[in-house]
Length: 215
Image (cartoon, rainbow, N blue to C red):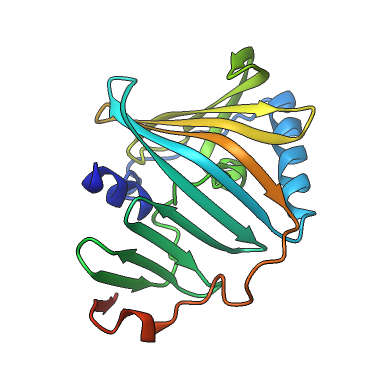
């Protein structure tokens, strides 16, 4: 489980593009829904998600763990089990408490963090988008949107399930070409909270016994 989480959190589902990109196709209805959600989240001072994170093979989730996600502007903090990722607006800090390691890197566009909202921006350039109707998800009559990569990136497809009335994400599924599946099901959502001023700051002094590697 830890290895799967580590791979997803640093974006290793994305293994590099090969071949020539096809013409991107984005369904107008799906685009409107995703743009409305993006505008809703962007209008908030900050957002908080509590979710369950599931992993498995062949489309079947076999293990789940709780996770939390905070975001404010382009900064975020994501925590699943003993793995945490912080983006302070400049650098990404991947913190593994189990191995007592921290890796620090500049975002370079070669990977995509698997978070409650990451596909709201990456779909614009990287995916064909189709609207697949309605589906009941945990009691919500959600809009079902499918993303298919324009060019090879290790992902077979992504399913987004959206509460259009509230303009909020309900669930997302990422299916890899290697038959891995990762699922985020949102359990709780809060916005415009009074967050600690250091919420998105990496304090090196708190990790004196960790191996810190800057890539």
